[in-house]
Length: 148
Image (tube, rainbow, N blue to C red; front, side, top):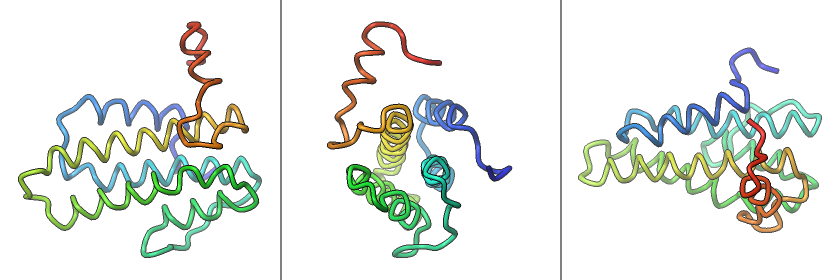
């Protein structure tokens, strides 16, 4: 693994901290990078080396495309990746907009959604016929046996 790629657990912890903190436009690049990092883990789990290419100007979208190769269920998070890019663009292009705090908070939540989907899919490959079809994970959380 790339020495600069944080562990799956570290990505989740950082996203939790970003969600708990006051939202700021300055966090947009980090949230995008965390999205890329969790996708890197998925691509490596599939036995591939993560691409450095970009799709529509974003590595995140190229990584998603690479991760979805021969796995149609992974397409469930395509819109989540696109929404992460959308919020990144909003925050980057208009950092002083009156809705910046709300946009930054939403970006943190979208990045977390991507993290939860991919980390869950890494545990339960069948997860993902629909992006929120996390029943196996919810059952574990509900029964108090979620892995730490």
